[in-house]
Amino acid sequence: MDETYTNLPTSHLLGSVPAVITDEKNGTDHENPAASMETFPPINGGDRGRGYQTLEGPSDSQQQTSNDWKGVFSVTSYTQYFNVDSDIVLNRLISSLYPIGGDFSSKIDANPDLYGLVWITTTLVFVLAALGNCATFLMQKRSDHATAWSFDVSYVNVAAGSVYGYAIVVPMAFYFSLQYLGSNSSLIRFWCLWGYSLFIFILASFLLLIPVEFLRWFIILLSGAASASFVTLNLRSYIEGNNLSVMVVAAFFLQMALAIFIKVRFFP
Image 1 (spheres, rainbow, N blue to C red):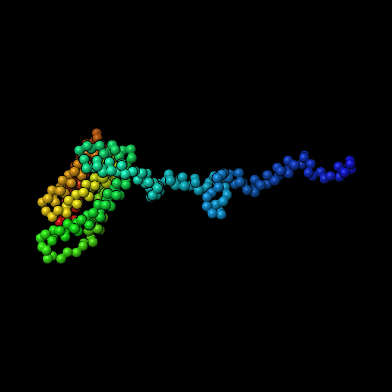
Image 2 (tube, helix red, strand yellow):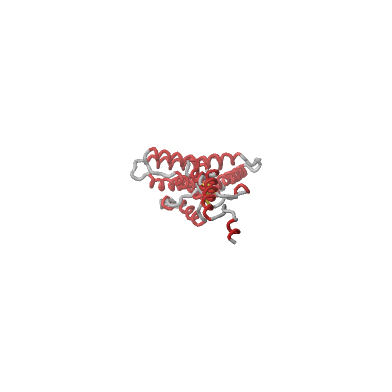
């Protein structure tokens, strides 16, 4: 029995195990130093994505990119401004028809939206193009039944260029002007304000189908005055304490100029 035990190999005795394990562990760490830097969970994706995500993985680079100025050109940066439901949009549309209140700026202060700007301007473009042609047809048939008439496709291009250009450029011009003059303003709120101010022109376009010239002028001037008052009364909240009344006057006349342009170009 003693001879059997003495013939056993001594390389697997307990005393030699730690040295072997230590050497293998140290060797592994030297061969793959990034192994200690791997964290869970694994990367989603195909076969190459099955594994562990390192500390310098895509998540960190994406987070840095979202904080960079390039986020201005990302669609996801603007999704928060479309987070409105039908009740909120309807309430703001109704408020735009009652400019005397002047509390629209307080309603959008916490949650300005761009949904109204996109929806109202796009609707106004197609309404002006369609109803403008219909109004021209009615006026021609009223004056001369034998006059030939054809649909003018250029109304769509003119309406898109004028409406989109006005709704985007004018608020930007006021924003940069007020920033230069030292007033606290917000470009998103200005886009929201001017976008909802155009809603009344959609309703007025249906009334402009009436083939009576003086009535058309009365409708468009009344609509322009209401839209201009809505903009100027809410614009005052951004220039309180500053002598910038010229900006308010400019906003009023620009809205009136847009109303007259709509009448002359689309409902002659």
